[in-house]
Amino acid sequence: MIGFLRRFVGFWDPILLWYFGSLNLFYGVLFTLSVFEVWKHWALASRLRLTGRLPEGAFPPVSVLVPAFNEEAVIVSSVDALLHLDYPDYEVIVVNDASTDGTLPLLTETFDLYPVPPAFTHRLSTPAVRGYYRSRREPRLLVVDKEKGAVATRSAPLNVAVNASRYPYCAIIDADTIMEPSALRRLARIMFVSRKPVAGTGGTIRVANGVHFRGGVPVAPRVPRSWLASFQVPEYFRAFLFGRLGWNRLGGNMLISGAFGLWQKRLMLAVGGYREDSIAEDLELTISIHRLLSERGERYDVPFVPDPVVWTEVPETIETLGNQRERWHHGLLGTLFRHWKVFLNPRYGAVGLIAFPYYVLGEMLAPIVEVIGYGVIAAGLWLGILDVRYALLFFGLAFGYQMLLSVGGVWLEFLTFRVYPRARDYARIIVFALLEPFGYRQLTVWWRLRGFWSFLRDVGGWGQQVRRGFATATDAAESEAPR
Image 1 (cartoon, rainbow, N blue to C red):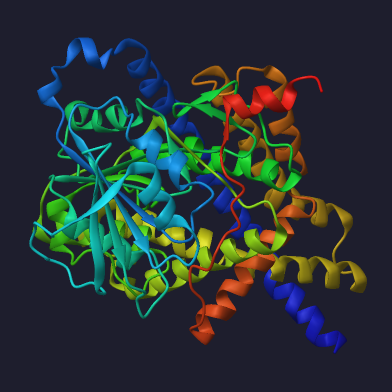
Image 2: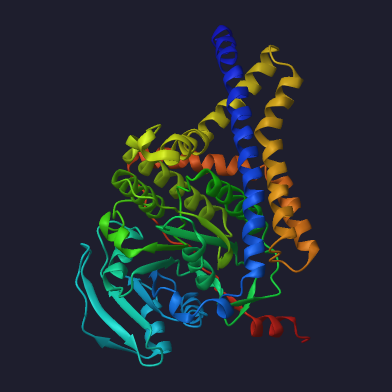
């Protein structure tokens, strides 16, 4: 046994140092590129006054698609914000995905819905639809009541919404999300400033827990009080401001988030819509469109734009967050294996040669490599064949560099868009970014390993998140009033 452990440690210790060293070097490149990108977009957002410089007719009409399953706590706030966007020509399509709570009755009562016949061609195959409803109060609102599908994913309701959409661009947003009034206009702006045709684009997602809203606008945003939600704030900063901005420069943005994205509908139809058995439908769609356009030899871009913002409610319980991260990793595995042809294939450009290998090595395999690292360090120290300096080097490469990048991402956001008005909120975010490697990161590794297990067993679905609902500015005033 001792001999096996010695060989195990001897084999893995150089591989681990190479892995984390290479990964951190790549993170450094991404961060450097993201600095240039965020300054470019910040300057553009600061200088460009869209309403004054671009005629209303210049913006393409957009269908906003909202899948909703048991979203009674948040659906009215979300839809109301969508109906007050600062955008010239759009519609909102909410698909009730066989909800078992009061989602549909609440929509019916709030927006005075009445049944209408379908007035479109069904281009995508979907589960049966029970009915279509228009609003007497808001003519731009269409609500579709869909029957339960064979697989519990977001793909089926989104395909129903694509079928019902009238316009050439589709914006996808989660039902537990509040879109800022200017977000869609800012997102569509990239159509005019990009040097290449834009196939799709995405914006920034912020953590809405603890934030109060008035008419879709956050009023004095604050960092969540919940410690679990607070840990997710630097994660979202890192994923959007640091990660996806860097991929803009590398030409390989391989994920447009399903919580906030904008696509050309013709491309969505060309790839057959959303794959209904995928629980990572946003990643699946993005890779499918990359493949389609690369195989056609078309010039295109899939950029990320940082200043359009939506706010989403994140999990505040260990069980719900764990299920979410398990589902994310399960979906990542399924999508990467289905599109394995892209891996290191020069036909797909930067996606095949850079982005896809990164997702395989830096995302898919990361939890396994990290667990092996813990085992190597523990066994090496116990056997006396590794000294403390090696352990510190390992943890420095595995955790320290990521901490620095997280803090750098927070600082970059503070200097540019500064969504939180108080400096102490940023100080709190930095504290949680520094604490992240000590417990929270190990939890995320465990949840991602569960994703491997559920993938191998071919079980799992979207599940259900417990919603607390969005707070309004009136709620905040009442809660802070003396009693």
